[in-house]
Length: 387
Image 1 (spheres, rainbow, N blue to C red):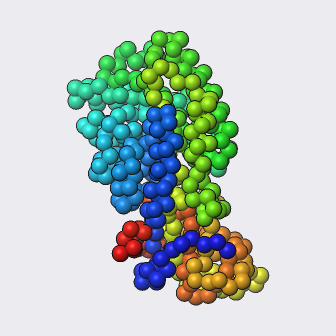
Image 2 (tube, rainbow, N blue to C red):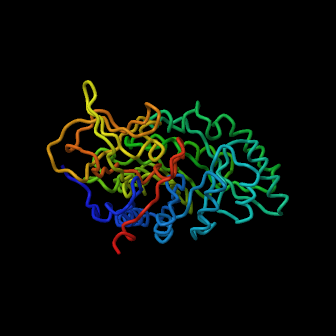
Image 3 (cartoon, helix red, strand yellow):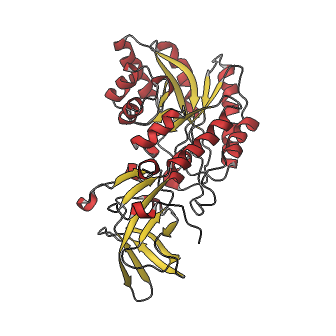
């Protein structure tokens, strides 16, 4: 079995579980993104919700990406990481007043507005500060992302965005709101999208909406198509970097930008997922009536995606080169949902073996909890362990 090149000797000195970030993989990923986006002057805002580890953010900031934030805490973290407020977009269906004020105070690039009441509150808070807030309307395009229903966001049944049927009202409303300026429209149809035809459908809808706004004499400075590009969870060693060329070409080929109009993206998982792993140790191998359980010291408190989304993560036994056999790979949490995989085939496993749960750079550390009063795992990077 092909395995990742990990510093096993260093791992043996560290208390498990812990997160490990291969910053070389991250840097190569960012080089690919920059290479593809500079061809047509696309602008990428890193989706902070995927991972805000300071070492990871430092590399992303140095690469020149902006930030896509969905909370005041994320806005502050982006600023603290040195990302310019002029590159920060702020979405979220429930922005609190203090979060909006934080964005106004720092003169962020744009608020992605998700409802009429939110637009009115931003106008009111901006007026109190004597400012004009730049906003984009997050429109619900009713385009299917063909992904897990928990991470589908662009259907009319979802809580996100403004329905297209409300646009006439909004066009009429803007002249009555002097402290907001409409500069763009924003979309996000879902996450972990591997069927790129979903993005073609989005382009068609964006082109239609462009015509709608032009027919109402509204010129938009930018279009923001969100993120959602998926990664290959099954084969992280063979596909450590997503196919950014194919992804960005979809928008080059199918989206009709107006003169001097810029196109913005909000990539998260595709940037950081493959650089991260959750490293764990086997506590026990338990023989059940019809299966073997590999019981790890990591649980869904440290990587919740399998329990929450029934998500797949490739698992590697870093300590064994023996013949393979199937295991139910589980954690120590007092919940039956604390299962990483059932019948997963890996090298023969024993107590003390090091296990890597791959592609955990996105929605691993950031979603960790202290359920069962477990300690939050520490994080280490390849740069740190190289010394």
